[in-house]
Length: 401
Image (cartoon, rainbow, N blue to C red; front, side, top):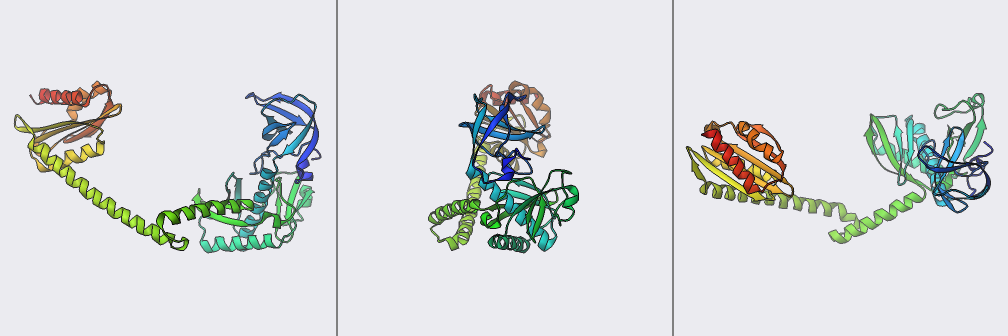
């Protein structure tokens, strides 16, 4: 592990190295392999470091076939390089990863709830807990213990041990490797095999805050943040709270009640609007009934529209049929590049509308469905709504005659 400087000194921000190899991978990405590196490669739930080699951006770092590959934006022209780590990203990852160890250990210490997986994202971290439920009280107790461990500023130690040597430690989970075993230890609290980067004391984690959880595959996926991310989250939430307070004209402590009042008011408005729509549909239905034409023993009601939704056509057709016996209704609307239609009749008309659709649907390369007394469908807007309506009426006349 001598060439992995990030293990020797995770606080090192710059280093010098020799280029051992410079090639492209199967996808054409340029990469170099160095005789030593401070760049941490993706692994164990922790993302890779970024930074520069001789000023060229390092965009990815992976350990492949036993070598650490630094993927670059452009080739390197020299055999020696000066590497600089994006320290803000590195230290953030150190805070988050150590915080994960502490919080996972707290759940295990207090409630014997084990962590089965871990992911360090760009905004939050997640751990999957081996339980199907989690209460606010349990989460709060684990968070409180984790922050107490941070406040005590305990040392975070690392040790390289053999598989046999690891047996002398109360490890939190089974080891995933048989050699080159690296332990991350918070004395008298957490003992864990881990290949990530961590600060050398718990105090540098600064704090842990759980932000939520949900059930995922019968496990609890817990979301949380550590260190400087807490301040970032607080700033975002404070900005949102302030803006909501101004919009709702309410102080922060009254925002919940102000929001409930606004939602209740909106529900009332939506209810009244729906009632108004129903009245308008009823009025429109009566108008169309009054304008109906006689066709044999039936009343024919047909209308072409622009930009009416299929739901509106359906509601209008049902309202007409409920008000008028022995009627046939055809409603068509063209919306952008699509034509939609609804045809309806009442049970007394004894007409099977489904048999008619096969005649006019091919005109618009359309599809449709329904039952004998009520069908709907749509297709390409290759003709106007009036033209398609006429095609439906002509089909009807042929079928009825």
